Every structure is written in C-alpha cells, then in structure tokens.
Image 1 (cartoon, rainbow, N blue to C red):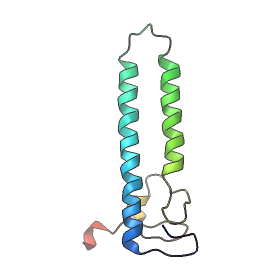
Image 2: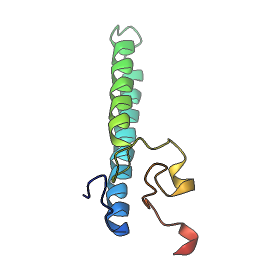
Image 3: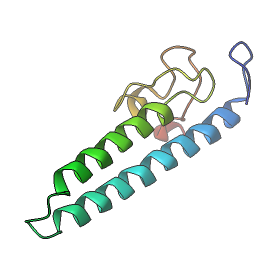
Image 4: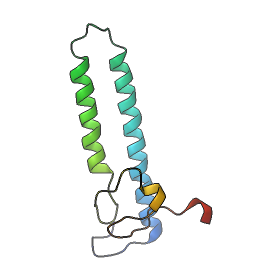
Length: 101
C-alpha cells in the first residue's frame, strides 16, 4: 500500500476498500450470530448482559480500527461512503459509481 504522501493506483485503493468492507460485513454477521446465541440462552443466565456488552464493545473496537481509508488511514464516516465514493480526507477513490460501469 502506498504511504500517506504517495498516491497508489485507483484499482489498488478500490481493492483495498473491498477488503475493508468484506471484513466489516463478516464482523457484523459474527456479532449478530453471537447476539442471537446469547439472547437464546436461558433467561436465568447471569452472564447474558456482560456477554452482550462484551460482544458489542468488541464489534465497536473492531469497527473503529477497520473502517478507515486504505490510503491515509483516516476514519471513514459511517453510512456515507457509498454515497460519496471517496475518502473525505485524501479524496482516494474507494468505489466507482454503479451507474458509470
């Protein structure tokens, strides 16, 4: 990957962002499965709330480290990347617009 002051090729940035997005999707699936499993445990289980808090905290920490621009590593705004398609800090092209393909 290119350093913070060098620009890598657009396809490299898009491929790196696909990896970021894929990791985020898998983490959301795992967190959801863990939450469902914990919620399906017997109601008298005293560990349910701590387990949910731990799973939610772990997912939040992972998301904070993962959801970053592959080029400059700045935090990406949640929910806005599919609309903007570029990093708000370094303007790296993270995805092409679907209509232009």
